[in-house]
Image 1: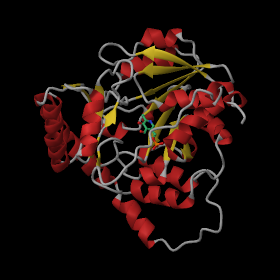
Image 2 (image 1 turned 90 degrees about the vertical axis):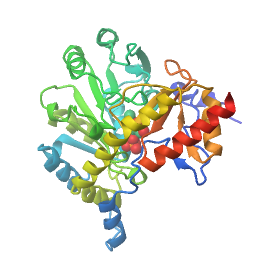
Image 3 (image 1 turned 90 degrees about the horizontal axis):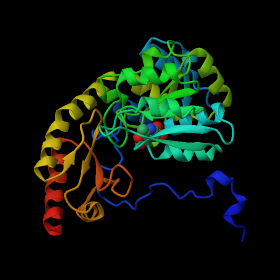
Length: 350
Ligand SMILES: Cc1ncc(COP(=O)(O)O)c(C=O)c1O
């Protein structure tokens, strides 16, 4: 049998990603929209009678036009992809050589390290401050080729300060990727500033507030020069035609997005208070999830909740989020269920 030595050296330590066995549990572990599938996208899918024989448009031009209308930019400011994960991958493919350093905050989205190494790069971990904000000097000192950061941050939930992002963008020689996967929930966004900074790439997704993770649609927004480079590198046709058309329908239904965001803003403080009443320490969130330090052992909490039919995400074994879990903000009923079951598990652990 060939050994792992045959793999690209930077990927030999890889393990498979989160892939839990799922039955009928309530899913508060992946931060998707708790209102359910995007209605406009579903409407399109159930009525579509078109042709699947031909290829989709090479660069998803119609979706990029719809996004250009939404943001008041041009089609060529956008790179569309098969989930924002693909777009993040394209960023490293476009801007890094094997061995290049890429700056990634700790804690942040676990797949950044995977995309850096998959492209032959070297992850440079940069710790966030005590309050989980950016350490601007530490980022600048890395002299990395690419710096990537989610704002709002996953798993901590808070947005980074715009002035810190500006300082990094101005002081950094490499590309700076601001991943706004949860951007709809936040008051701040860097999308409208893409023409101001020559090294800014903003990444967004249809997987969270847009409620269509199963269709895998994401995009990058950047100035015309940078987006042009990325479009030359991305795999042609990578976004399939049904997903593209469903995403266009979803963009045109902004009322659903407003409703989804309003639900989170209404329910988040209630869930936060409920968790604190049970002894959790919560971190302030601008997203549709809350990071909370568990009053009992994190693995016992997560597995105990799963047995009772509720899934949340365990971050308790990772540095900086010791004994923490990440919980998607649900509807009133889902949050009540989560709190009731969490109280039972905590009682059983004591
Ligand atoms: C910060 C962040 N970026 C990107 C992604 C990937 O999203 P997509 O489904 O668009 O690939 C996620 C998914 O959880 C995320 O949390």
